[in-house]
Length: 282
Image: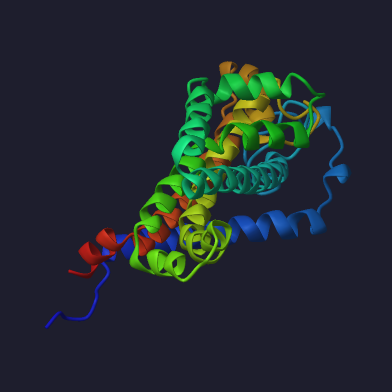
């Protein structure tokens, strides 16, 4: 008889730490703007490039603005772009993958060849092309990330649809006279939604990095907007002069939350993966 399921202490600590980071980030991006509007932080050239202190825990930037407050606002923008872009890409990828997997035959082959063509172009290069068509702003970046990251979701959903089509309950539904559309909507699509949701969660950190990369290159958000990519780009000169805090803290705000989100997504992946779940229960 198998004993009770136990979670390794290291894994439990990692999951708890990741959850605490995510909760802290959500609390900061939701509450800080209500307490300290960014518009109230005027340029103070007399206080520029001050090292971290009790008054400014993360120091000030090259025009005297508080780095901590701008990091919070930058992370807020990055999360907005990441979540909306991930949802856009997931909806698009799920629709394409489900259509290909449910139709099968020539339609499946044609759709997947189109996916292969788009996959042959690097994401960043295609994203630069998309944002170059519009003025710098949040929504062009969302469109850039969403339109270039649906391909992996389409492949995952299509593979899961093909797997489900061979199940007995699908054969029973077809034998009972159910149409192809009804089988896809009532029996196949609900089975792929958990993995599509996991793909969306895994895509959020990637979308945040994509937005920061575009902003760092000057193709994402306008330079006056608080963005982690913009902050790192603007702080390159100060780093060369020995002032490390305007670069270090935006980088940590970019790295730590995305690692925490990826860790929690890994837990979800293990829970919905039958083989991995059985290994954890041993």
